[in-house]
Amino acid sequence: MISILTPARGRFDQTKSVIESTYQLADYPDEVEMIFRVDEDDPDLTPRIGELKRYPNIKWLVGDKMEGYASLDVMVNQMCAESNGDLLLTWGNDAWFVDQGWDSQYSKWKADDIAVVQIAKDDKNGLATQFPLITRRVYDILGHYCLHTSIDDYISWVGIRAGCNYYSDVRVRHDHTEGDYIAEEKELRVSGEYDGGIGIRTSFWMLENQKKIAEDAMNLTIPEGHHRGADFEMLKIRQSGDYRLCEFYGWKTLPWSWDD
Image 1 (spheres, one colour):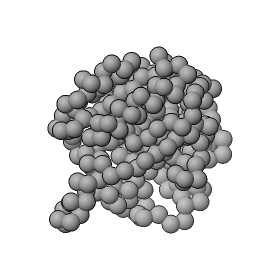
Image 2 (tube, helix red, strand yellow):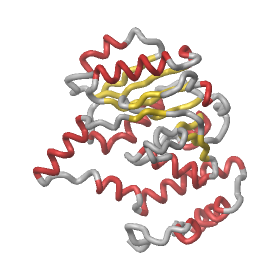
Image 3 (cartoon, helix red, strand yellow):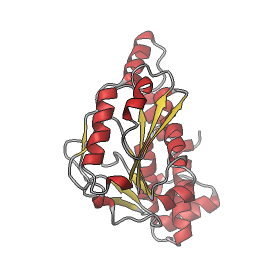
Image 4 (cartoon, one colour):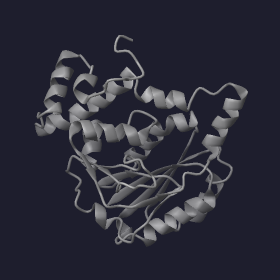
């Protein structure tokens, strides 16, 4: 089974379209579980989730908005804890699979594999770290999907550094439209109260977050004895407590100081 994890707010008609398309294009729809994390104060989507319960294998987690976009990692981890799938895929209610049989394209990866799987590289989307999938074993080892609101980038970099990052042939149409969270951030920008956005993205490269990524990568490599190349160097770094990874990862310029 594949569990599709979707933090969602608003866009009822669009969410319905994503659900219908996901199941229609699946070769094995009974083996697809969709989990949505919605805000209890959402005036558009939350009051109407009863209209969408006729679809198979759907769970709705309703909870506090917390810090909105800045709490995406918390929401995704909540959905992981409620999931049943062998494979866990983060999603959005602004994304659609392109091809029939998208689920079969993930069939080469099993629950016990250590793998972070990306969608197919796409010239339109540009980013190769959108909508990553992890196996159940990766989740069990880490105890979470991610520890930063940049959920795609976080787990993708964990996979890259652990040597278990792979690419699938799954194609996606991502209509990255402006949702409530983005509109809210724009209002805060105008008022001068905005402290997210660039701050959130910059925080991804801060030392504290990079330590978390390095630790997660090591936790994935150690059980398999994958101490080769950068993995072995990472093991030495972990043992010494020195996380200055840039020297052998080729990072010459980073937006923080290792002495901070």
